Each structure stands twice: as structure tokens, then as C-alpha cells.
Image (cartoon, rainbow, N blue to C red; front, top):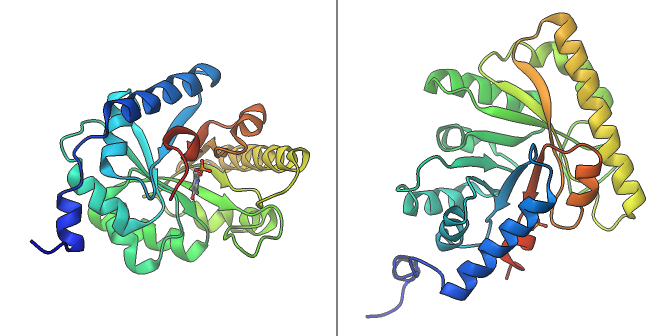
Length: 245
Ligand SMILES: *Cc1c(COP(=O)(O)O)cnc(C)c1O
């Protein structure tokens, strides 16, 4: 039979070789032991197969992050038998993909504008869903990244407070690539202070959709620094699953 992309997907191995599964499990155990118990570990499986998700699930992981919608949907379709998975959407969310994202994900970490927040809120109401969301902030200039500046975000809180279908759970930040660790740590610290500020304001104003008690920060290269600065959710890809192709 001639190979086609469809067939190669269907023929993809259901599970990884034993040694690869063992290696993934060992890394999860090792990372978990080093993390405070209160920190949620999200395994980022972008570019990796459904079999990678399955291997990590078997090792006890229940939170998985993806940054491209279609790729995530394809994997989810192969993993419907897994119970109790929390799916986290991490990537830039185009407005025409909001409906699918709200249907298929429990968390959206990448809410980066009022317009997107409003749209997610409206569609979530239609679908009777209430996703947990993080507000993505950009605390240094970075042409490669989306996100609110601290100023912008603080000034737009009253509008965000009206989106009652959202559970606005925290901030998400990705420091610019290639900066020194002292600067990375400063950025994580600033994100933490910003989240505190928003949480206090939300309390004062009794904005019930804004708990703001989560800090989604830390990737393979910087998660120890993020934890030092109070991260509650680390998003790890390469350090669990190995380099991406
Ligand atoms: C890819 C990605 C990660 C994981 O990155 P690693 O360096 O592989 O740990 C985390 N967060 C977001 C938003 C990503 O796109």
C-alpha cells in the first residue's frame, strides 16, 4: 500500500518502546521530587506523539500542555480512553479556533488581549464551560511574544472582571530567550508581584471571577528559577520528553 500521511498516523505505534517509557517515567519522578508538592507539573507534548502522552500518563502525570490546536485535537482523539486528564492550551489562540479550544481544554494559559478574553467568555457561556485562564504578560520588550504589559493589564482589569464565564486564575509569563538568569529571576519576581497586586484589587472590588492565585511560569531551561520566585505551574517539554525534532 502506498504510504500517505493519514496511514502513517494511523500506523503510529500505540506505545513507545519500553526503555523510552521508562526514561520518561524516571524523569517525571525526578522532577516531581525536586518540585515543591504544591507546584503543578504540566507535561508539554507539542511535536510529540500521543504515545508520549500515554507514557507520561502511565507514570502518573495528569496535566498536558499543547500549543497548536489541530495537533492537540489529533492527539486527544487517540487518547479518549485516558481518564482525568487536564488539558492546557499554551499557544497563541486565533479567534476562529476559540470554540474548539474551549471545548477541548480545561485551561488556557495564553489570554493576551481583552478582545480574546471577551470572545472566550462569550463562547464559554454558549458551551456552558468555565475554563481556567491565565493572562499572559510581557514584562520586557520581545518581538516574538504576545502579552499584556503590566500597565495595560492593570488598567483593563475592570473590563476583565465582567467576563464571568472565565475563571481568571493567574498570570503566565515567558521571559525573552537567551537572557541571563538574574534577569530571568527578576522577571519571574515581577510577575509574582503583579499577580499579588491583581489578586488584592480583585478582593477589594469583589471580582469573583479573578482568584489570581496561580503563576504559570517556568520551562525546561528556567523552571528552577521560576519555582524560586513562587511559580505554581511549570510547563516542561524537553526535560521530560527529550529534544523536539
Ligand atoms: C514549548 C513550550 C513550553 C515547554 O518548553 P520546553 O523548553 O520544552 O520545556 C512551555 N510553555 C510554552 C508556552 C511553550 O510553548
